[in-house]
Every structure is written in structure tokens, then in C-alpha cells.
Image (tube, rainbow, N blue to C red):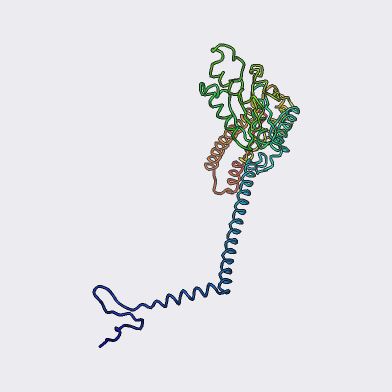
Length: 395
């Protein structure tokens, strides 16, 4: 007699165990039905349209993403461009206006001669040099080499710094005495400086060499006693780097002894400016400039300048200072400032002694029956003694 189907759940699975395996019924028609449904879906026109729509949506999203990335790249490029421009403007504007104390930014030469005193010829050459450097930067021209010669303290270094500042040029200051003191390393250090300025792209530079006669003088063919091998090498390095015109750097040399410079050095010079001892008209401007810088600001300490210190007084000083250099006149006016302060301190000490003596006298002779107002008035008057300094006794 046959037995019925094995017991199980509604899905036809059984929990009977035969040995170590689980037995049950599997319906393969489910896979067939799924495959048939997929085939019908694939053959359906609507499914193809749906697939194309999904594909189009994905492409649209991809293009939108690429567009956003492109916009971000443009924004970043614009940001970097603005940042570079702002940094460049800040570099041009970072030096404050000397007279007003606020940043001018334009480096205009309109107030340039308010801070530097030169004769008319040098003023014209200074203006010409600044305009020449500006044009060389604007049109990418070759830079000229300039020689400044004259007695010490006549404004050669100030001239070079003014040219660099008002033309918006970076500058490097080299002292010739320091180069000669480097000995065997002199030529190596000079090579480093020139190679450095040559590698700077789109950044022109002024190399100012003060006391150039220290290592650029004549004597290459003389004995080692007068001109060492180290100085020969330093001179050779300078001549090598300045043999041709350059768009990257220009050289400004300053010397007190033009006649002792090597002929090859002189051959590389395009312009020569002579700085001489200032004349009386220039000394007047210097005295006025340095008094405004050193002496008259002392008024903020309640120091009263004597009324005799006027234009006639400054003119008299200028005539007496003829023959001095600009540096000597500056130091003299600085000494006047120190003298005024010493006189002020001395007078302050004398006032304090007089006040203490007067106060002690008032206390010892004080009578309570008398009006106390006179006592207070005397003390107040002694404290209000003028801090007056007479400058016509300084010089």
C-alpha cells in the first residue's frame, strides 16, 4: 500500500532528516516564470523608454556635475588672480608716506623733494632716473647702470634709495668694504647675489654698491701687495655679470674717488652724477627740514621755543654752515636737539630747587591769620614758570 506525500509546510519544505541531509521539494517553475517576465520586460517598448530615460537622467546629472566643477575651477582661478593682485598692490603700498604718516600707495614724486634736498641739476636727474626705471618696468626695457660720485655725506646713498622707492623697485645694498673683507669668499658671494636677481621672473631689481672703490678700483695688473687675488676675483665676478645689458637688474655705484675705479667698470656705466658740497640755498632747506624733524617737535614736551628762532635765524645758521656736507648738517641739527633737551632738564632742576626753597620759606613764615589765598597763588605761580629754551645761544 503506497504512502502519502511527506508532511511539510505550505512551501513544500519538510523537516524530515535522512541521514545528515535535509530533504524537500523545489519548484523550478519559479525561476522560469522570473526569466519569462524579464524577457517580456526587455521586449516591451515602455521598458526601453524607461531605460533610456534613466540613462539620460544619469548623463544630465554627470554634465551638471562637470559644469559645477568647471565653475569652481573658474572661481578658484579668479580668487588666485585677485589674491595675487591684492598682494602686489600691498607690496607697492606698504611703505607709508613719510610726511603725512599715512600710506600713499602711488609713490608719487610730488612730495619727493620735501624729504630730500638736491641742487636743480640733481633734481632733474633724479626725476629722469625714476621715470626711466618706471618705463623699463612698464615696457620691459634694459636697465641702465649709474655712477654716483662726490665727497662723503652728500646724499649718494639717499639718492639711490629714493630712486628705488619711487620707481617701485626692489633693491639690494652692498658695501664695498664688506665685500673686500670676505676675502676668498668675496667672488662666491657676489656670484650668489647676481644669480639670485637673474632668476627672479618679472621682478626687476636695483643693486646698489656703496664704497665701490673698495674692490672695483684699478690695480688688476699690479703686485699682490696693492691688489690681492681675492679682490681680483671679486672684480672679475662683477665684470662678468655686468658685461651685457640686463632686464633683470641695474647697478648703481657710489664712490668718493671716481678716478681710481677700474676702466672696465667705468665702461659699464651709462650715467654719471656728481654730488658736491651743498650751496647756501640748499643748506637753508636742509636746516629747515632738520629743525622740523628734530627741534620743533619738542613742543609736545611743553618746551617753548624762543621767538627769535625764525627764518632769519635759520638763514644765519645756513650761512655759517657753508662747507659742511648734508650728513654733517643733519648731525649738527640732531646735536641741537640734544642741547635743547639738556637746557630744558637744567632749567627744570633749577625750577624745582627754587620751588622747594620758596615753599620752605612760605611754610616757615606762614601766619594763619593772614589770607591763605596768597600762599596758594605763590605756589601756583612758581609751578607755572615757562619751560623756555633760547636757541640763539646753542650755536
